[in-house]
Structure formats: structure tokens, C-alpha cells
Image 1 (cartoon, rainbow, N blue to C red):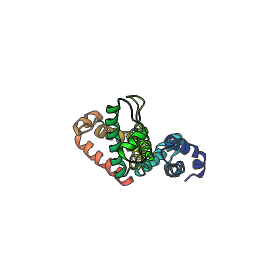
Image 2 (tube, rainbow, N blue to C red):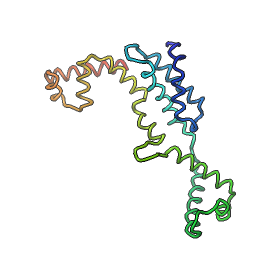
Image 3 (tube, rainbow, N blue to C red):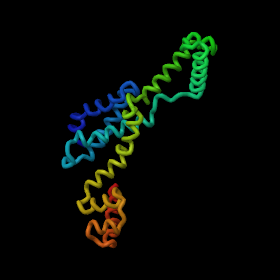
Image 4 (cartoon, helix red, strand yellow):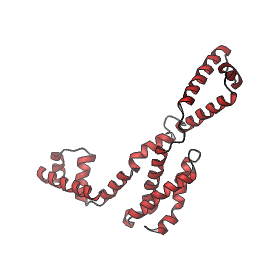
Length: 213
């Protein structure tokens, strides 16, 4: 582990954590992100390019995992039930009054405190803010996390690293078979090998990857 790499790139952790400011405790995000930075420093090889670029997926991966496992907007069944009642009452009163009902009117109609209605409305607003998109082409916070989930999972990062250690011929074979979804016959024609050679080499490469992961 290179301590200097970690100390010099703590700003990277802060910048990624800041993307989720307002949703989760920043210090918690920083700590889990720092774990990703440490993992990256242990696996980093200078031949892999800039450390900041290499470490980004590790840091984001740890923060991503934390967010999925520690959603702080878990709503109780009682709150959900009350929210539905408020929504129905608001719709009904809107039709009867031909305008938006006030919180006081809702409170009197449902016979609950105004403060409780305001609390439910606030929870609803926070939930919407997580799923809010500016336009059809934008992604919500959780959508953006989910789309990067597979790419930043630790096992995927490890696999990418091991694929980078394959020689050009091995990588081309794996690319043809598993990325292009080509058959062994098609691969053999592309690589100028017999189908038997493709079969044997493929098994050998897969065994190598399995042993190193």
C-alpha cells in the first residue's frame, strides 16, 4: 500500500462523496470511499495509467455499495398508509373546492395534526428528489448509481485487471467468444486457428483467470 498515493488523492474521495451531499452522512461516505482508495493503491500498477483514473472506479464502487445497503429514506408501513390517506383526501378536496386544499383543511378533514401532514409531505418531497430528472434524457441519482453498479463491483474490477494481464492473442480470443458472442468455429476462422486449438486455448485462458481471481 502506497501511503503517499492515498494522502495525495483524498481529494478524489471528497469530490465523489460530494455528489451525494444531502442524501447521506458525508463523513460516512468519505470513510467508505477511502476504503476504495486503499484497495486501489494495493492493486495499482504504474503501467495502468494515471492513478486517479484507476482509483475512481474503486472509490465510486465502495460509495455505491454503501448507498445501496444504507438507504436512509426507509419509510415505515404506517407512514406509507398515512401518505396514501393524505393523497386521497387532497384529491377529493381538490375536486370539491376546485382548488388546492390547505394543510389546515386537510388536518380538519382527516382529524390529524397539521405537523404530521407537513412531515409526510416533506418525506414525499425528499423521496421525489432522489428520483427527480430534469428531462427525459437525464438520470435520477439512483438510476445513475444502478447503471454503474456492475461496472464498479469489486469482482468486475478484479476481472478487468486480470484481463489486462492477458497477452494480445488471449485477449482477442476472449473478446471474440464472450464479447462478440462468436462460436468456436467463427473464432477459429477469425484467428486463423483450428476449432480444437480455440477450444484448448479458451479453456487454458479461463483456467488462468479463475486461478488469479
